[in-house]
Image (cartoon, rainbow, N blue to C red; front, side):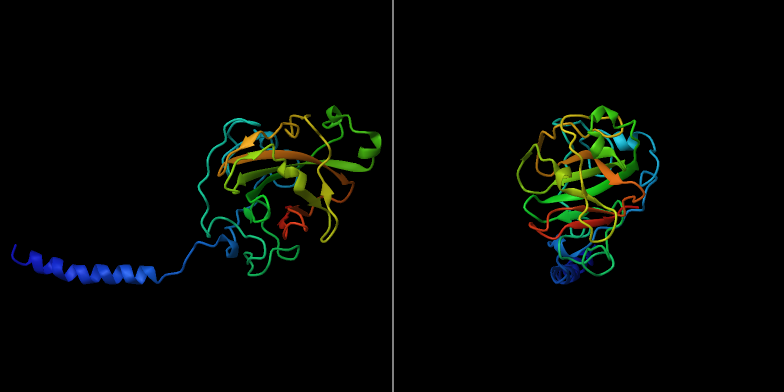
Length: 245
């Protein structure tokens, strides 16, 4: 019992030294320079429809297929750290360079978009459709002639610091059939949906830190399947780019 005070006195300098060393460690407050861990491609990647993944509810926690649709309650997501937030614009990708068509993100990796509307963006699936499936959209024959529909489903997490109202993220999401191409924008499917893609649902209110799942139909020229996905605008900041499969 008489040695206990001496032991405690010796432990105090050691604890202080440990705290000092911790304070000198690297800072992780800048998600703009570290890429997200790349997730392995799933069976929902480019190819034949694989079930309910392509028609999952429109609002869900990141990395899941659950949640309420449209303007319903979404699940909150904590602000990501540098190790999990993904690669921002101009930062280093997993390969050590800028995100580009030469060094894209993996098909289901999360990227942090740092433009005017800040968001964490995670592609969920790219599924080839059929002309019969999109008949409900009543496209003009000229719009679908020589084109194949693809359903692209993406999770978006609001990182703006404020609520977003009716934010159609998919309107800035493109499908590319070749590097550097102009890209294919989402087809106009206002307030219409098919079971494979709930593209017509209004997004409603998305609170800061919450995730919403959106889907859109892309009419891609026959014989040229998607090779890349891109989100953003060159007039805003450098887009995020993913390998499609």
